Length: 39
Image (cartoon, rainbow, N blue to C red; front, side):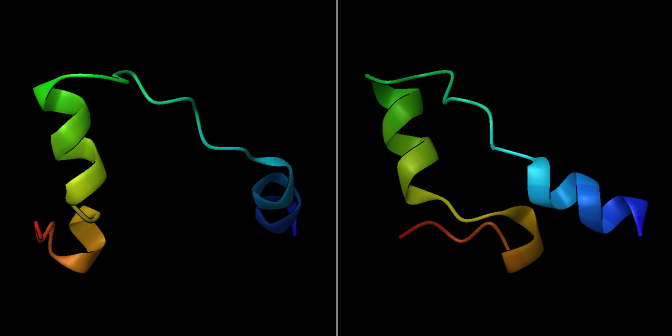
C-alpha cells in the first residue's frame, strides 16, 4: 500500500547530461531490466 502511494508521487530525476557523448548514450540505451540494449 505504501509502495503504491510512493510510486504515484515519484517523478524521475532530471537527466545529468543534456549534451555530449553521455547524453547521446543515455538517450539511446534502455534500462537494465530490459537488457540495456542500445539502438
